[in-house]
Image (cartoon, rainbow, N blue to C red; front, side, top):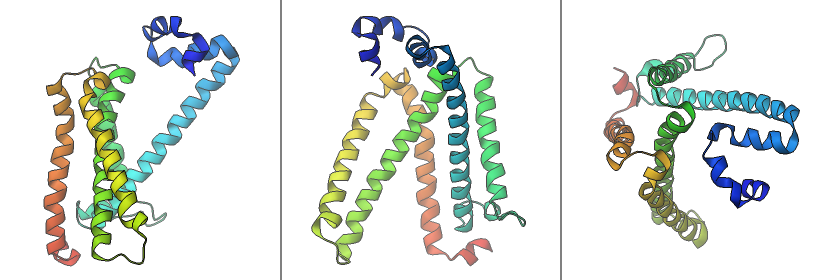
Length: 217
C-alpha cells in the first residue's frame, strides 16, 4: 500500500528517515493534518488498549500457574472485593516497570531497538509453542482418535507443524536483519527463552509427580 502511494522511486528516501513517523507523514500528505491528529489519538488509545489486554492476559497466566504451583502460590491470591488476580497483576506491573525503567537508563531507541529486541524473542517463543501444540495434537490422537477424521487428527496438525517449523527456521536465519544485531547478540536475546523452557520442564515434571497439596506443604 505504501509503495503504491508514493512509488518505488521515493521508498529509499522515506525509509531513510524516521521510521516511527513514516505512516504519519504519508497520512499528512494524502489526508491532511487533521486526520493525522485523529490518527495519533487512535494510535495512543489502541496502544493503551493493547497493553491493558496483554497485562490482563499475563496476570491470568500468573494466577493459573500460581494455582498449579508452577510459580509461587502467592500469585494465586485474588482481591477479596473484586475477585481479580491482584497479586499477579501487581507482579506483572512491577516486572514491566522494571524492564521499561532499565531500558530508559540506556541510549536504546524505543521504536527501532527496544520494541524489536523485546518482541523478537516473544515471536520465537510463540512459534515454538505452536509447533509443540501441533505435535501434542498428533500424539494425543495417536492414542485415541476420539471419533475424529483423518484431517483433524493427522493431516491438519502435521501441515501446521511443518509450516510453523519452516516459518521458525526462516525467522532464525534472518534474525539479524530484523534486530540489527550479530549472531552472538541474537543468541543472548534467546537465552531467557531457553532458561524459561528448562525451568518449565523441570518444574512441570515435579508438579506431575506431586499433588498440589504436597507442593503447598
